[in-house]
Image (cartoon, rainbow, N blue to C red; front, top):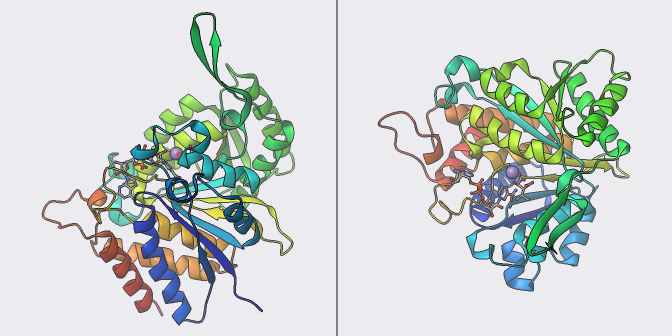
Length: 366
Ligand code: NAD
Ligand code: IPM
Ligand code: MN
């Protein structure tokens, strides 16, 4: 049987820096006989610089063929002046849309060693383990009409929130399935009080819920949900929400764990011929231009994204847990990149030193 295939798209800013650390983890698995056919390509600003587009058709085709894609981050100030159609972020959005990766799983887990470090009180975040399921291929990110038009003597910026029943149904099913494997609690967030798309969202999620009678389903307006995430996040198990609310809520949830540099994600689509979902894995954070090129980036979100690939694409749940435990061990040992520094007198390690420490902990786990 051929090795599982993985397409790596490091992207921009800290993307290549954190991806270099994931490579060390992949190489470590290679020494243990778990080998991946890894190919690497350009996305985002890096692809724009080389080809004048943030994602070439050839890279898009490759992404459709492999078992999983792993992406670093895209974007940066250098590209802010570009026309919207060729901005780095469009490359990522094209991957999500054309691979039809409708369910974006964003787990927020607070490691014990970081419970003191969160900007929230320790008892609010200690032991936190929630999963945000963000709809990723529709909603206001993709709805038509969109654009900037002239109207009278001024311009108007337009985006459209739009959801079909089937789009809501399929992401709701993903969330219920996850809830069944976790604590059987699902909270759906929208703004049914002001948006028709929210009314439909609530109706469809409620209907899908009839197929999952064991799951306790609740609904919350997304603004109240944001408040509850900060007030007492442990009330949640799985949260399902739309594309834009999910973007905001998951960045907020990141701070419950201590740093945006901790949050991984899996973007999953419909099953392929081999029964596994089409999949792209990426950290929740961006290209962090403020720290790029300085060896300061925390590679944990990207390494944990690879762990999610082990679990969801490569049927290696035990090895995924091994990576997560290695991260836990390193944090428990007090190893900290600069974003995780709170304690007095602790010197931060570099991106590369954090990667090395995680590989060492992996080595000690066998
Ligand atoms: P960002 O996530 O890049 O950075 C926000 C803050 O978090 C910064 O202070 C940064 O230094 C810090 N941070 C992020 N990741 C970190 C890590 N791994 N280790 C340590 N600190 C980390 O968000 P932004 O500044 O709003 O956006 C910068 C660029 O990234 C923009 O072009 C944006 O569009 C893009 N972006 C891309 C993605 C993606 O590729 N998936 C996600 C978000 C933002
Ligand atoms: C994310 C990012 C992206 C989004 C951007 C870079 C397109 O913020 O993955 O959270 O808005 O979805
Ligand atoms: Mn985001």
